[in-house]
Every structure is written in structure tokens, then in C-alpha cells.
Amino acid sequence: MAPERIVSLVPSLTELVWWLGCGDALRGRTRFCEEPAGQIEVVPAIGGTKNPDIAAITAMAPDLVIANREENRREDVEALRDAGLNVLLTDPNSVEEALAMIVELGDALGREAEAEGLVGEVRAAVEEGGGERRTALFVPIWRNPLMGLAGGTYGDSVLEAAGGTNVLAGRTRYPEVTLEEVAALKPDAILLPDEPYRFNEGHIPEFAGIAPPAVVDGKLLWWYGPRMPEAIRELRRIVRELAG
Image 1 (cartoon, rainbow, N blue to C red):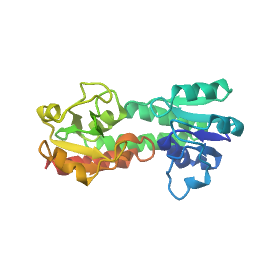
Image 2 (cartoon, rainbow, N blue to C red):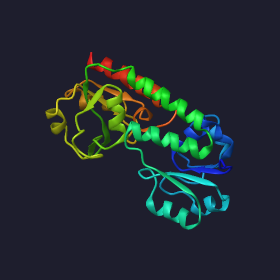
Image 3 (cartoon, rainbow, N blue to C red):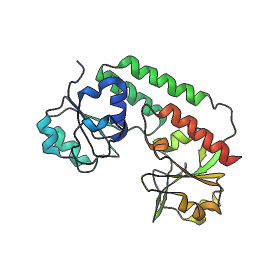
Image 4 (cartoon, rainbow, N blue to C red):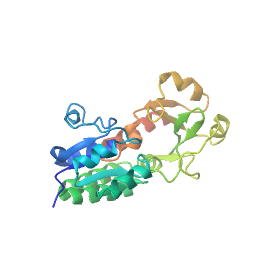
């Protein structure tokens, strides 16, 4: 039986739940769950991703709580489970794992056909770029200290799906780096996402001496769910322009 009361602690998955047609079942979200804009506001906010109101969530008696290993804290997930709640803990670290998660969530919500349809759209977007020359990319995720997107992450995988090769793919997660190290890796282009650090046009001169940089919507790199097909296409377009 599909859950009738859902709490989502993951912004991208809140959007996915709504897209799958289960917005009416959402009883709680974090204050960072802002999509779909103009619609999600009817769902009460119950704290942030790192500090959800456990008592408020428990009082809602949801049938399903959706959480994420990276975005949410272990102690909060354990507290929710200790309260007897059913917590679906997600942890996609590649495009393929994100697709498997979409199928899993679709099954849990009784929206199998919708989920499978989205998976097909993502695969089609990936295949559109087959055979292209790979573009070496560097993606910083923080500025002070400078940290970069590396291997073992969804962001790294989506870069590959969009026709890029991550110059930090041989390292793990989000390592600290220096501008000198990045220059030595000879990226063809640099993507400056506006989340989690809010890179903007004012930061372009810091990186322009290494490779052509561009500020991009961070959701293209970090949000899995209904925006994946267009995210892959948009990243591919941006990378093509930067690489010339």
C-alpha cells in the first residue's frame, strides 16, 4: 500500500515525490525543500536537513520518511527509527545508483510506471552524447579552503554522463586542493556551481588563468530526480561551449 503521509528531508527527493504525483501525501519538508516553487510551500517546513524537528516529525506519524546519507545526520535518522518510523535512507553516488533509487522510491510510492518513464528519459539523455570527445573538467565545491568534486560521487558521475572527465576522478569525494594542483591537472574548463558554496561571476578571475570558467546552477550537478535529463543536456551544452 502506498504511503499516505510522507516526510522528506532531502530537497531533490521532495521534488521527485511531487513529480511522481504524491505531493498530496507530503506532510513535512525541510526549509531547503523549495521545489517545485509555487507549490511546495503548502507543505509545512520542519527544520533543516541537518537539524530537523524530530518531535514534530514523530507527531505527524508519517508512513515514510525519506532521508539521505550525505545530506542528513546519522543521529537524526537513528532517532526517527528509534521512534518507530519507517525511514528510507538513500545514498546514490552515481547516475546508475540514482536511477535505481528512483525505481525504489517509485515502488515505495506506488508510482512504478512514472519512475520507469523517468529512468528511460535519463538514459536517452546520456546516449545523446555518445562518441563525443571528452572534456577535462575541474569543479570546486568550496572556496576557503578550496575543495573540489572528486570520484565516488553523483556529481562526478553526472559529469561523465554529460561528456566530461573529472580531473579529480582519481581522488575520493571532496578533497582539499590548491590552485597550483588544479593547474597541473590541465583541465579544459572549470565549472563554478552556485551550491554548496555560492560561486558567482565575481569568482571567475580566480580561475580564468587555469582554464575557461563558467558559473553554473548547482542543481545540475547535485540534484537527482526529474531534472536529471535536462541537467545532463544542459551540462553537455555548457561544456561544449567552454571547450570550444
